[in-house]
Image (cartoon, rainbow, N blue to C red; front, side, top):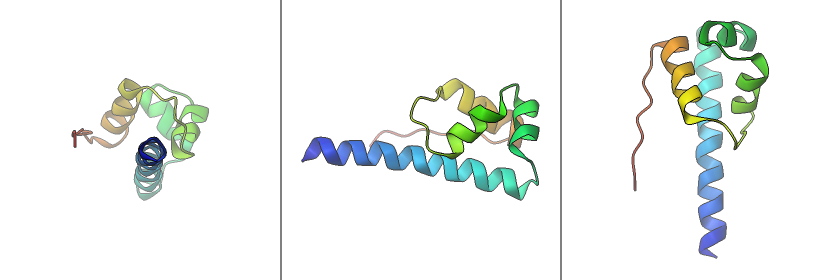
Amino acid sequence: MKKNRDEYEVGFEAFKLGVMLQQLRTEKGLTQEQLAEKCGTTKSYISRIENNASDIRLSTVMRIFQEGFGKQIRLSLN
């Protein structure tokens, strides 16, 4: 039972990250392609994050938020 819950929580955190990215991008009036160009990545990578991809690199996500929006990601352990 605990394994299923842990998997669900990890999946939910990835989902939240994608939603945050999409909300910031649309608030700034950027397309996925424009954001990708601004951050040195690809449109398909932005799409994968927004659509809950689980195999994304933390360093790339941090760069997208920093270079794309001037935001820092803060991590916490619970």
